Every structure is written in structure tokens, then in C-alpha cells.
Image 1 (cartoon, one colour):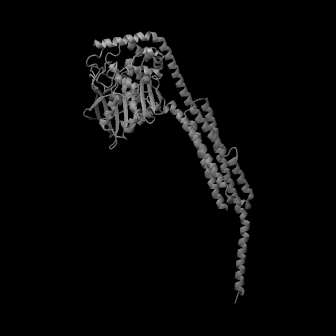
Image 2 (image 1 turned 120 degrees about the horizontal axis):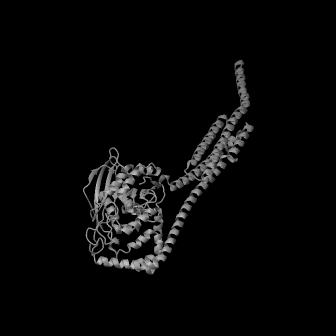
Image 3 (image 1 turned 120 degrees about the vertical axis):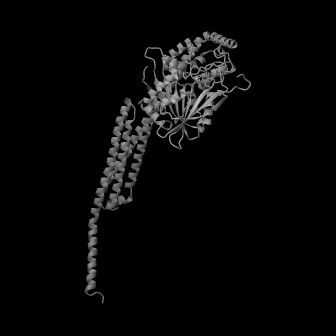
Length: 501
Length: 107
């Protein structure tokens, strides 16, 4: 298993370099303006009548002064001349940086257009096969549900465990598909990005679902979140996809702990939020750590687990399939409300820095909270750390520092169909687990235990961007004299009045 | 303006040249930007030329300061022939007045 890490973004990323170019362009223009001001100042000093009055005393030496002043102020090597040339270079450099940005954006747009077009072609090609398959599957699902044959039909359906996939994992064909997708790495991302095009390519009568589905299809589906929104509309038919958003959060007694020492410790805290692999998970746990680096200062670490409930019939754990789908659609979820309630009950105040750390769906919740202007008005979320989460599309503001750790073999971070942004405050660390030519193990790649190993490597990384991110974590990490207090919150979906639990 | 005032002006002009040199250092530092391409190399070469040109422009300003110092000296020298006869005439007039008053003066 390779220990090599690929790092994109951050202070060493392309966007940061373009920012540097833009800053340098500004500096050159500032230098040019300063030289222009110096020239003006010199001209004013030399244009005084008192100086010219000395012509009667020493006309020859005054003529020499005038000649040198003319060279300094009006000659080809004078101050105004070099100021103008410096300004021109500054403008050219700024245009070059802008051009690189525009080319980057245009390339992204062109690639996405190509992905969508390819998806449309595939959608039209598979339509004749898909109609009977979808109809048959839907009928089978409804029938199996009625006969209570589906997994998750009975009580205790949670899958639990930090793998987020349970003990058994997905069934054979699905697992093979996931492994193949994991082996595809970034290509899988392009394939996922083509899926909305594929759906758009299906004839509308193909999806004779709810009127909402048809209405949604009437507008072009161009991005994965829009597609996830369509899937979420199936909630009335598939209970496991419904997101009523009602949740009850209770706090367990807190305890004194050492603050996290590094990123590995942060990941361990997320792992501690999962129930044991062999136990059902009717409730979810969210951990909030209060870190006091010194008396009077407070910082907070919020650890958010990923999906623990896979049943299509739904359950009481808010970190479930519906949470995945609706979080992907950028919609409110019970998991999101659980975290907000935990932060509220923990007593986090405005002005205290917050680090949100999440695995899988937990990372989506973290990125979603950091992107929400309403949440940001209430809390100072300064850092987001995600492992194995598809968060590329979240509009996390520039002043929030993001570290996204992903295995290229892990399909989950690819599900948003786009690469993470390369920018100053967003570092993406990727690691490929499978050997070249071998088939990826997508389930192991998404497992939080595997990510814990990768995070230890991130802790040791000497990459410039990673080092800069780690340096910013100072308020949240252990140091001499620092104290920590851990609080755990249990979250459970509340039944909607009038519906059976 | 006398010689001293001209020298003070020259000092101010020298300060302008120093500021221009500091600008040259800052502008030259831009070449350290992490940009790698053929265009980047051309940019760095051009920037080095321009930083050199700014230092050259500062040298031109230094020339103005030197010219002012020479002018200050020239103005002082030019004033000297006028000052001496006036001073001598003053001294002479004083002596004549004293001699007149001591020899018989008004009685």
C-alpha cells in the first residue's frame, strides 16, 4: 500500500500561484505609481522661482542643474519614463493571471459540457432497456416491502461501524462495481459528472413518477446535486429517502480529556462517534470538544460521523441514506440539525473558533454548515477537515480553511462529479491505496480506519500546503497548559406526527 | 536662494533618488514569483531590465543633486566679489567717521 500523498490547492496550489501573480501585478503597479509621485515631487522642488532667481549669480551652473533635471524628468531614462514601463509590465502580468484563470474556467466548463453530452447520448441509448428494468425493480421493491422481505424491514436495521457500510458491505455485483469505479480514480469523477446528462437524455415519459419528478426533468439537470434532488423526491414512495428533518438531541455527561494532538487524533475522535461494527445504530453520536489553549480562550472541535443506516425503509438514526441524498442535494437534513443542536447545547459562543471534522456524510454536513451564511452569522467556523467526503461543490467561503483527505480508490468523494477547488484556503490530499494494475477495494478505501492511517501520513507530510494548514490548527491542538472537555450528544430522528415510526 | 539653501535642496533631491532605489529593490523582488513557463522567463528578463532602469533613473536624480551642489558653490563664489567691496567700504566709512570725530569734531 503506497504511502505517497498527492496534494492540491493551499498555499502551494495553482490558484495560490495565480493569486501571487495578481499580487505581483498589483505590486508593480504600486511601484510605478510611487515612481510617478517621486517624479512629481522632484519637479515641484526644482520649479521654484527662488532657484531660477539664482541665474543672475551663476547662470552656467544653473543651466547644468536644468539639464540634469530635464534628463531625470523628461528623458528616456528618467523617472516618469520608467514608471510608465513598470506600469505596463504590471498591467501585462495582471492580464496574464486573468488569462490563466479564464482558461482554467473555460477548460472546466468545456470538460463538463463534454461529460453532459456523453451522458445524454448514453441516456438515449439505454432508454429502451431502462424502462422495463426500472418498472420491474419498482414493482419488485413495493411487493417485497409488502411481504417484509427487504433488508431493514424489521427492527434493528442499522449497519453502524466506521466503515459506514456495515459488516457485510454492499452485495457482490454492487461491490464489484464500486471496486471498478474505485480503480478508475479521477475518471470515475467524469463518469459521475455525466450522469445528470444521462438522466436528461432519458425521454420524460420514461420517468413516470411523481409530478415533481416530471417538473424537475423539464429543466435541464446539469449537476449531481440537482440529480440528488430528483432522487430525494422519491421520499414519499421510498421511506428511506424521505427527510422530514425532525430530530431530538440529548447531551451525555461531559468529561475532561487531553485536546487533540494532531490530525490523526481528530480522525480518532470521529471514529469514536460510530457505534461498534456489530451493533445496530438507532441513534447517532456527535462529539464536541472544548479546547482551552490558555485560561480565557476557547476553541471548539466538532466531530461528525458519516452514514450509519442504509435501509431503504428508513430508521431513527439521522445519519442515514436520506441524509446522504439530501445533503448531496444541498438540502437541510436531520443530521445537519443534529450537529447544530449539539453546537447550541455545548454553549459555543460567537467569536470562538470552530473546527468541524467529518467522515463521509459527516464531511458533507461540515462543509454545508461552513457554507451556510445563516450558520456563519451565528458561529465562527474557521476550519473544516473532511475524510472521504464529496464536498467539491459546497461554496465554502475563502476565509474557512479546508483540508479534504480522499483515497482515489474511494468512490464516495467522487460522487459529486467534480474535483475539489484548487485555492489558497482549500487543501486536498489524495492517496492511492491499490497497486498499479490491481483492482481497488472501494469498501476498505472508504473505511475510516484506513483513513486514520492516511491521516497519520498527512501529519508527517512536509508538503508546503499541508504544513501551512497544520500551522493554522494551533488553537485546536494540545500544548502545555491547554485543557480539554469532551461532550457527546445523542441524536435520533423524531417521528412525524401522524406517521407510523 | 543662497548656497546653504541650495545644499538643503540637493539633500532633498538625494532622498528622492534613495526612495527610487528602494522601489527598484521591491520591483526586482517580484521576479521571485512562482511562475514557470517561457513567458515567465521573458517576464523575469524584462523585469530585471526595468529594475535596472529604475536604478538608472535614480542615478539621473543623483546627477540633479550633484548639479545643485555645484550650483550652490558657484552661487557662493559669485556672491563673494560683491560682498568684499561692500564690507571694505563699510570699514573705511567707519574709520573716516572716527577720525573726523577724534580730530576736532563738533565742538
